[in-house]
Length: 214
Picture 1 (cartoon, one colour):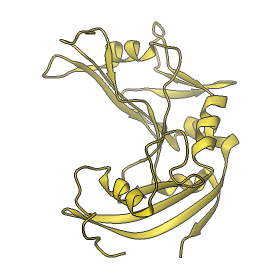
Picture 2 (picture 1 turned 45 degrees about the vertical axis):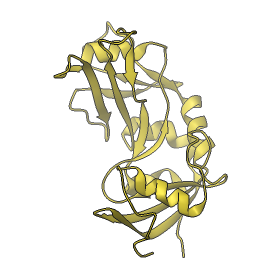
Picture 3 (picture 1 turned 90 degrees about the horizontal axis):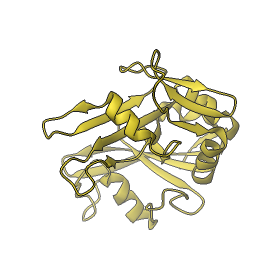
Picture 4 (picture 1 turned 120 degrees about the horizontal axis):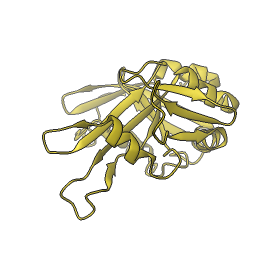
């Protein structure tokens, strides 16, 4: 597809995907169901990780502990914890523990903290509900235009292997939260959501079938 006129103005990193949804006439605003009813649609243009879904860990309030224990102060007096655990490596020393029925984020030598966890059932349900069928569209951006170049169809997700994919680092866990000083609820957090993300080339590890479209 060439450079589309009229719909090609980009205002941010997520706009190529929004334009694609508009061209296809689908609403991608629901995080829990596929964009096109039966198919989830994802745009990618380079090496950035694809976001699969947002899913907060348990128990309630765990991010307060994570931000205050591991966050970094910024110039505005906030404490921010923005960190991705991917490929089994973490610059902060975190690791993924795959227990009998849940995935837990931990740090060696630290025990006096509430660690976030996700049960296997919650992870599998979140993945299966949105990603039974996936369309990825690769494209390129140039100034304020986007070109959609190639699409692949993915089917038959390996749902029972999803938790292990998180454990081995194929799936990344991405935290992004900070304190909210100076607000009415100054003890609260500004939490942008915990994301589960994957590199485009690693999609083959979580699907049985992959086919080029067209």
